[in-house]
Image (cartoon, rainbow, N blue to C red; front, side, top):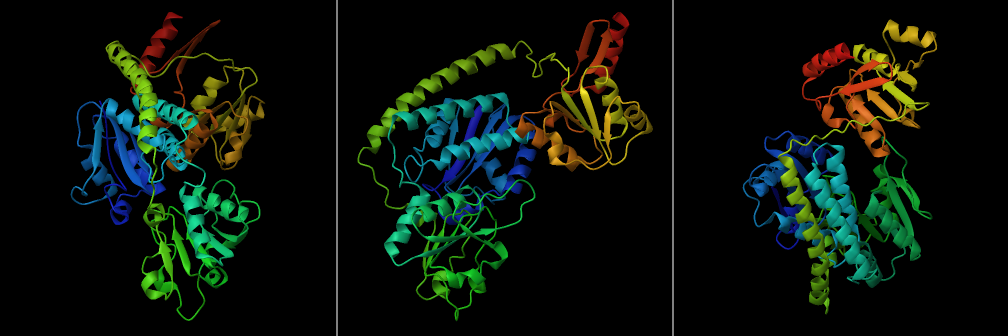
Length: 477
């Protein structure tokens, strides 16, 4: 059973949407809670400036909006909202990804946000096969809508609406952009292309490399208040749960920009600046998006609906097939035998579990490396005998470069989880010893005799049963 619930700019003011906004940490926590709830097979959360929506695949009917309120920490029922069930969920999602439900018709950011939502749920182990197909087909429908129906024009995006606001105020030459995410980078790039002297704030990130648009100047995020006297407009676009600009931190006796544009939900810029700073003009996403009108909107939406219905019909056929097949006890994990010759296998960890995995993998033709600051003597002995490579240090992200198969078997949950996420992003098969739900493959019990190789698994549900079955298979062989 598929259902969804949400709020958007049609039903909720920005004040209420802020209460339903999820930071990255909140999304991680929410998906973790959802996947452990009885009766829920899969769940995906979408949280953007204009809406928050929860999609659920469940055994039985549930109050999806009440669940969304609980996840967001919103007391009561949270006001007006919308829901959908069964195929209407897909109709809604197709229209959403296609930009039909955006404040700015046909805007491009939403399809990327929908893709990011299912990707996040997948990485966190919350998405099931039904939601995977639902989102995949809805995104495909959205792409077809965008390719065949001219819904909007380049200027009709929140970034270009912000540019229009800047151009209307005139005599603005210097801009400060707070935020190095997708919207912040796009805003910076657009300003530079239109000959504005643009500075972007930067933070220090744990992973990856910060991307700075060509031509942009940079300043440390902590120096943002000092930079206010050197800009004519400030634009903030982060996912921070707190204000990036607090009105009380701005000194009235110093120069400050007269134009303030807030592209975030929850809002980055304290709205009190308009009362504390004489002459300040402030726009949030709702103010920037007002006045949208399209003479042929109804006609274009009807054309889009024709495309959507074709994808909905295909999805309905797929669901019907799944319903028939579900009675046949279908299995999630498929036994696939692949060549190990010369391929790089990595084990992170040096304890008993790692040693067992080493023993199994050495029966095949993998190029095996073990990384661990400390490891059992038997692993050291295998290294000394040239059977494997042992590197005595902590895991680094670059250790996964060129790896075909990885095993995370450390005593640290956060390290194992990180390896699982990184491997999933890179398309690497990974076994996470302390959480089968994070595995890209399940490490099997292996029985070998001559040219016969058998692998056994219970889908991560019963280690004891697998051990007993493996013994019986070895006895037969």
